Image 1 (cartoon, rainbow, N blue to C red):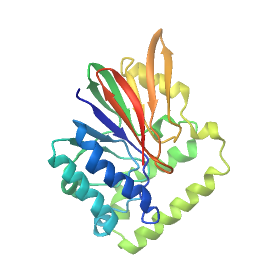
Image 2: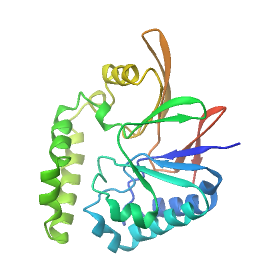
Image 3: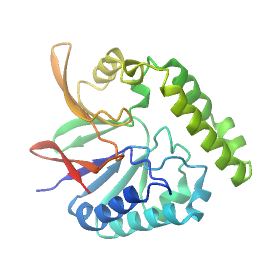
Image 4: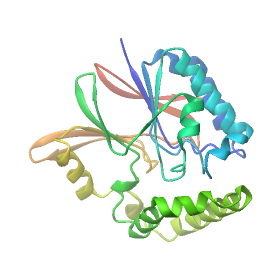
Amino acid sequence: MAASFFISDLHLAADRPQSTETLLKFLGETAPRAEHLFILGDLFEYWIGDESLDDPMPARVAAALRELAATGTAVSFMHGNRDFLVGERFAQIANLRLLPDPFTISLYGTDTVLMHGDTLCTDDTGYLQFRKMVRDPAWQSAFLAKPVVERIEIARSVRAESEQAKKSKSMSIMDVSMNTVESVLREHNYPRLIHGHTHRPATHHHVVDGRTCERIVLADWYGRGSYLECDGNGCRAVTIG
């Protein structure tokens, strides 16, 4: 039976080599069973521009994605809050398609909206202000014009500040807003919703305007790897590694 796989929030980094090795094994041995692999953001811990491909780990990942595509499995990538600067050079080398957020598909007969998930966390106003700034084309142009070494230092600093800020935020603020989730479901005519970002894997059922909608949250890869497998019979989470 045809199936599609979904992953997100791997946060690959040179200092976490096990996650990279788990992904490479997954891409080589498991993912070729899928007709489509969707990566819904935060594949990398940070991305300072496509010059990141000059580093060994991202280059290995891009090559493995290209090899997967060569087997016949389509690969699509949606930007996350950590790797929003992934660009056309990476897409071409990895032979994948860049998706907008949100993106709607018919998944084996079920209308499904794909998102990274950060825009659902509307109670975290500080993050949304930061997101608006870094997604601005002018900000991105200015950042990408800086030397690579400076960009790396900025990315590391932002990552450290983000981790520190989380300590003072309540868990509810960093989770999705139910009002926003319901608004998205209503706007897209009550579909299934698949997203990551919150690192709270679960399957939820929301009743919106009398319609029951399924929302599936993908797992992160800080522990073991995980993917969501969907086919004509539904979706199920699979743990790997």
